[in-house]
Image 1 (cartoon, one colour):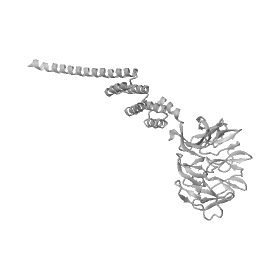
Image 2 (cartoon, rainbow, N blue to C red; image 1 turned 180 degrees about the horizontal axis):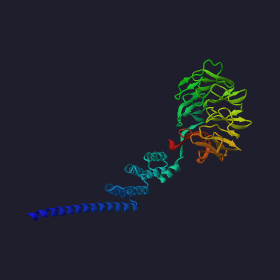
Image 3 (cartoon, rainbow, N blue to C red; image 1 turned 180 degrees about the vertical axis):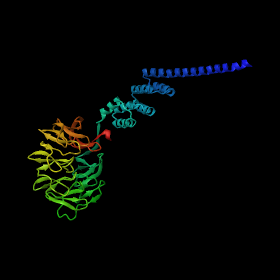
Image 4 (tube, rainbow, N blue to C red; image 1 turned 90 degrees about the horizontal axis):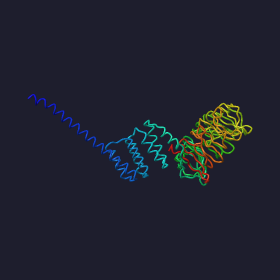
Length: 436
């Protein structure tokens, strides 16, 4: 009986050993099968039999899925040059290994090769959200950061964007396009002005002047007790707008009340300042119409007829421009041959010794004057003219969109702008793909 008891542990050991041996044998067999699939896949690949190569790789991956082999499959598919398979495999890698950057690099490489920059940026945004970074990926994205396309629409004349809309003129009629360059209000008016926060001034086909919303609905009239013929209706800023004609202008508020005037002419309010013309001189004025500066020959204005932004204005005296603060005092002793008013809180374009550069609101030169012409910075970009053509620079002064255009407007908040191609007399919408 005791001998039988001794046999039990021995039997268990033997069975355990046999079980372990069987498992090891199965594992070795699976490894041999896996290795064979890979060997077959690589042999087929060498012979450019890509369909069978892919099938063998797939069988291997079903047994053991690794990122290295996925990358190897990706390289094989690139050799096969079958676009749909390459794209599908890139998406598979991203789905299978979402926390590894290699799949994104592969897919972005594919989209770059096919100039599908929108998808490049879409997948790059995913890596940003997942906090995945690589120098390779950053370099790829930086190389296409300023790629653009030109929309299908073409326009006879077009103004700068104002609050998301731009005045467009086709066949002598005025309308508005939206931030994508699509018609928001078809060109049917005799006149349309820069759009304010809510409304834009227009003259309709019958000759009436009033304000419309972004759907073309009549929303606001000028004061009905104004005893003059109205041929001017201005941009609404700080709750006021200029209204009048070629010789007499008042400021009215959105409640329909006359606030100040009459003036010979007037700009628009911004940051509680506007410019007004009296006795053939232009002055800086506050919201009540109080004169704050000496008289000047003129002030630099933007499409909204704003002159004051970023705390300063450019005024002309004796054919030179000076920079004024909100109290009408000069900011710097520097004088400029010409100047464009600030469009945001970055830099303004000024002309010094026949060339254009950029200054901050203290008058400090931040980008040296080297251009034939320039527009002030807007949303991180400035249009500049070099060798007779227009391109765009960034805030560091680097040319990021080559000068290839006959003319150019400023960049809006959606990174769209209007450009005129060298071979065309029409304006087109330039869209930076990164921001679409």
